[in-house]
Amino acid sequence: MGRYVVRRLLQALPLLFAISVASFAILKATPGGPLAAYEGNPDFTEADRVRLEHAFGLDRPLPIQYLSWLGSFLTLDWGYSFSSHQPVLTLIGERLPNTLYLMGTVFVVVLLLAIPIGVLTAVRQYSIFDHVVTGTTFTFLSTPTFWLGLLLIILFGLQLRWLPLGGMATLGAPFEIGDRLRHLVLPVATIALVQLGSHVRYLRASMLETIGQDYMRTARAKGLAERVVVMRHALKNAAIPLVTVVALDVPELFVGALVTEQIFGWPGMGRLFWDAATRSDYPVLQGILVVSSTLIVLANLLADVMYGYLDPRIRFS
Amino acid sequence: MATKSVAVPIAVPLATPERSQWQMAIERFRAHRPAVIGLFVLVMLSLLCAAAPLVSPYDPDRTRLLELYEPPSLTHPFGTDDLGRDLATRILYGGRVSLSVGLLAVTVAVSIGTLVGVLAGYYGRWIDSLLMRFVDMMYSFPRLFLLILFGVFFKGMTIGVIVIVLGLLSWMTTSRLVRATFLSLKNREFVEAARCIGASDRRIIVRHILPNSLAPIIVAATLGVAAAIIAESTLSFLGLGIQPPTPSWGNMLNHATTDMAKAPWIAIFPGFFIFLAVVSINFIGDGLRDALDPRHVVHPSR
Image (cartoon, rainbow over all chains, first blue to last red; front, side, top):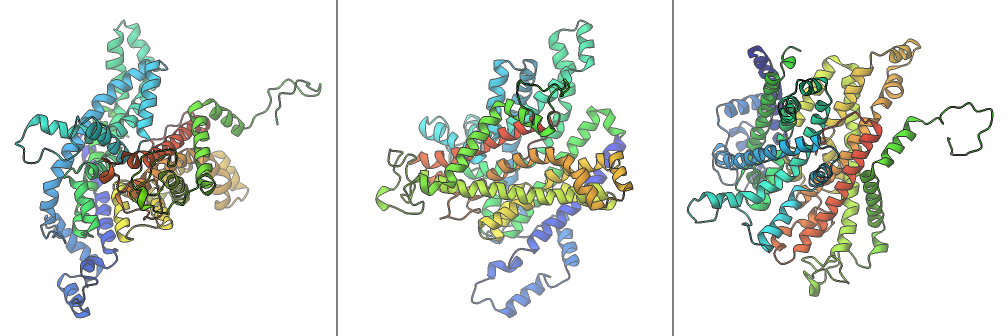
C-alpha cells in the first residue's frame, strides 16, 4: 500500500508542474501583460514601462521568469493584488474557508442523499419510485445552476420569504447557528440538486450491475437477510467506483460554487475570482487558478489512493 | 430495404429481413420515448428560433420606454424587460445564438478531440504520454474559471470567439474515447490484414479504425452540446460571454439578480428555454447511448 501511494504521488508531480507552467503561461499571454493596469494612463511613458519591466524582471528570458515565479510561489510569496494591494495569499486565505464550507456541505448532503436514493432505485428497478426519482434527478441534472439559484431565490426568498436572499449570515447580528444554517440552505440546494443527478444515476447503474453478480446469489443462498445482502454485499462493492466519480466532479463543485457565490453574494473564492476578473487583477486570478487546480489534483489523488485501499486489485496492476 | 410486404416471392429463402446496424440503432432510439420527445421539442424549438422574424411581430432590439417591465400579457406573452423589449421575441433571437454556439463549439471540440485521440491512440509511445498528460492537465482546471479568464482577455466575446474558446476547452472527452478505440483495435487482425495489402496509415486510421469510434463520439458530442449551451449561458449570465444588445439565453438574465423582485419573469423565461433545450438534448443523448452502444456508459461531462 505504501509503495502504491508513493507511486501515485510521484505521478501527480509532473501534472502539478504542467499546471504551474500553464498558469504562468496563461497570465504571461494576457494582452498588456502584468503592466496592463497602466495602459491608457497619459503619465505612463515608454521610459516608465522599460524601467518597471526591468524592476520586476519582466525583461528576463521566460524560463528564468518562470523559475523565479515558481520559487516565490513555493515560498508562499504570491504577490499583491492590483486593486486592493493586499497580499494575494491573505485574500485567498480569507475566502477559501468560506468556499470549502459551502462545497463541503454540498458534498456531504449530496452523498447522504445519493446513496439511499441510488440503492432504492436499483433495488426497485422500474417501480414508480424509480421512474419518478430517475426522471426528477435527470431534470435537475439539465438545469443551469444559475437559473436554479434564481428560481429558488424567487420562490423561497421573495415570494414565500422563508429564507434569506443571500450572504453567509445576517449582517450585524451576533453569531447564531440557526441563522448560519438558514443562509446555507439555498446555496447548498442550488449546487446539490444539480450534482445529485449524476451520482444517483451512477450508483443506480453500478448497483444494478452488482445485483446481477453470482456472489449475490450465494449470499442469498446462505440465508442472509435481504437487507444484509443489499447493504453489505451489493452496496459495498457498487460504491467503490463512486469514489472516482465523486473526485471527477470536484471541478464541477468549484464551478457551482463560483456561480452560486455570485448569485447569493457568498464571500468565497469564486466571488473573489469573479471580482478579480472584472478588474483584470491578474495576480489574484493566478493564485486562485493554482489553488483550485491543486485541490482538484489532490482530490483525484485521494480518490486513487482510496480506490487502491478499497479494491486491492488496483494496487498490483 | 426490408418491407412488410406479405407477398413473399418463392425464390427468397426463409430468412429474417436483413437490417443494417444503423437501422437497428434507429429502432432502439425510437423505443426510447423521452429521447423521441426530446428530439421533437428540440426540432420545434430550432424551427421557431430560425423563423423568428416570421413568428414574432416585434423587433428584438427596439426599446419602448413606456412599456418597461410589463408583466406577461396577450400582447407580450413573456412580458417585457428593463428596456421595454419584448421578451418572447428576444428569446427566439437569443435561441439562434445559444443553439448555434452550442452546436458549433462541439464541432470544434470533436474535431480537435478526434485529432488528438487518433495521434495518441494510433502512434502511441511518447506522443501518447505527452498528449494524455496534457489532457489530465486540462481536466484539472475548472472550465468556467478558464472561460472567465478568456472573457477578460477578450473583454467579452463575439459568437466566433466564444465558439472557438469553448471548443478549445471541451475536446478532452472525445480524445479519450477515440484513443480508447484505437488502443483496443490497432493490433487486431483486420488492421494487420489491411496493412499487409499495403494500406497507408491514413487509410487504416480513417477507413478501418475511426468508424468504430463513431458511436461513442456521437453520444459524447450530443451531451457536449448541452454542456456547451450551459457553459455559454453561464458565462453570458456573468457578463463575459455574448455581449448585449445581441441576445443570448444567458445574457438576457444579466440583470435578473437586480430585477428579480419586481419582474421575476425576466429571470424565469429565458432560463426556462435554456433548461428546455438542455433537457431535450440530454434525453436525446441518453437515447442515442442506448441505441448505439447499449453497454457503454459515459460519464456526462458538463
